Image (cartoon, rainbow, N blue to C red):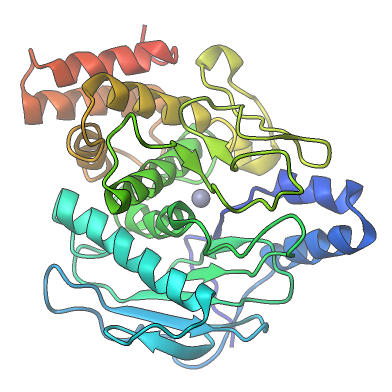
Length: 347
Ligand SMILES: [Zn+2]
């Protein structure tokens, strides 16, 4: 039985990165990257009933289900840990469980949102997907994590912000449903990085100046010359490696990348709104989820945000929401304006 959701899969690693490894890596790494790309381009096999398991009727409490694909590529796999059960002893299973919990906590504690759909939807994650599978993705109803290849990539549950990033694709699907192409796609990606980083910051109790603002820290093994996959503070600086090349993200409209690849650069130009968020958060100080994050969340659930909204439209709505929540003459509105001016989206 196959089931491809209309929303389409949202992969964590962009195809251009895997394509580089496929063409320039050792024969084993090239093979791993090639079969990951193949798996990412295919219909996904799904076993059993299509209905989701029951969600959480209690606001403030998640309903988590973690499955193991046991190195197969059939979803969801065997249920190995559900809500309230103790550690399994399998790091991938337990990291997924903790990561789902931390992401739920961000949306609940910071934004009073009860799970992905706002109505207690069950949180599903499958780990140990495929063999040497080098990616993680949201398939429209659940998260899926590969174990990596052990040479370049660790298991994909290793970074909380990756888990929160993938789950945020689910939240966006239930709200603005930003089209996954061009600027709206880059906004979709950027929002997932924003909430991914905020979930990690909340979990660690970090203030804006204590956070690393990295996405995917810990994913690369020491064989890769890089700290993470993306940097929100300094897009373009996350990695610079002989095999992977250089982090291609711009941090300003002057360097906006026009490309057909990667759905029109959704994982590339997301650096611009990422940096705008970082500028706003740094200007406001304190905990980023309290003010900058609140404004971004208010914008995500604003009905005026359309599927094809571009950077300028999104920026305008963050200003409108900052005014609505904090007042027209507030420091928040000024910080938001300067953040977007800082990346050349507003003049
Ligand atoms: Zn994504």
